[in-house]
Amino acid sequence: MKLASFNINGVKARAEVLGRWLDEAQPDVAVLQEIKSVDENFPRDLIESRGYQLETHGQKGFNGVAILSKLPLSDVRRGLPGDDSDEQARWIEAVVGDTGLRVCGLYLPNGNPTPGPKYDYKLAWMARMQARVEALLAEEVPVAFGGDYNVIPQPMDAARPDAWREDALFLPQTRAAFRRLERLGLYDALRLLRPGPGEYSFWDYQAGARQRNDGIRIDHWLLTPQAADLLQDCWIETKPRDWEKPSDHTPIWVELAA
Image (cartoon, rainbow, N blue to C red; front, top):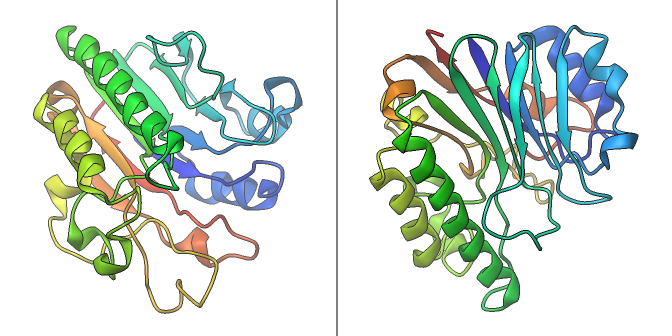
């Protein structure tokens, strides 16, 4: 089974990119971030006409996540437990078919500017995610957490790490929170197979960043031990970033024997 995570940066603005990508790449399951659409206004036909079941957790003009699958989705859950007052749509999860695999799609807060309430929210959100991860780990089932984490885990995950030292994506507290997730027992799928530098999933639209490969790796798949046992491949697909009117992110894939 091939799963992909793609921050589409506005599903309506990138409808042509998304449709082309689905036609060419044919993921079995995909999680989308930054759909920037309420559920009732999501262009469902774009997904469903291609044979996918679609589940969304939308928000007007901002954020928003979705799961699409060629297999049936069940036990769909929207939002992280722990704060019923949180109106930001950043988490969705579901079980895929009869595989037993649970897929969680997430759009972790950016957190800038720092210090300030946006960064406090980022760290609090990561703590809530940690609690959900702990609960799922206790079930001892395969779970794949894919999405835009807005975290640069290590210096080698940025072409110019010094440029990000004061950014919320790379602050020590941010990286420490990410490491806490890993220390619970999660595995960074890409790093299991590709431990070297030069793997990026985001390039700014400005200053020719893509042309200079001045990128960062902030889109990740983290796997429970049961999912990591199924891991066959993981890679970043750079081609969609070079299409006309692209997202500033590009998809990251994981292939599981599920």
